[in-house]
Length: 194
Image 1 (cartoon, one colour):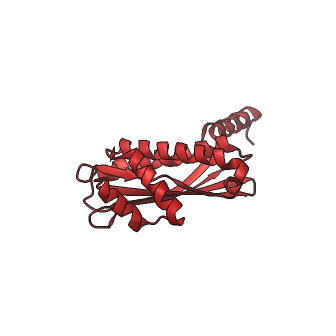
Image 2: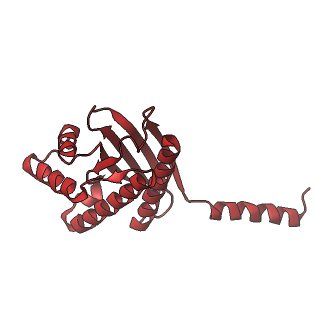
Image 3: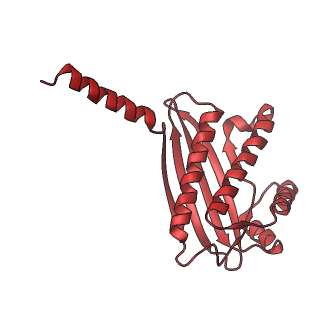
């Protein structure tokens, strides 16, 4: 029978490990086309992040939605820069995206590739973030990022991540989860393109 002292140490170790690890769980996969390196196709045109979330649809949350889109865009931009890409015509891309979206309330990859060609980009990047809300007290977030070669129309890399932030959720918890997803993506892209 274990002594109370050894039981205390085992319990202490268990609590320490639980507290020191992230409370978020992330699952994801990253595909990179064989032979793709950011040196070959360096100029990335990134379109604004499209966020799907029930609570952000409401008019009273429109400012928060703009903030989240902007912050997510900045995190994506850092991901591209960390793996060696360069951002091409950031403000013109956003302006043309908004213009195309306002014209007929739709924006697709074909339009994005055409705009990226006009802006002399090598790769066009599309991103969607879906907030599935909470289930059993956990918030579920999915991030999909797709990079397409402007000349050939082929996917050069694609990532799909799902993350779960445990416990009571607020915007800070989701922001931390989103940051962890983009950090993981940056590492994977850097490793797969070296």
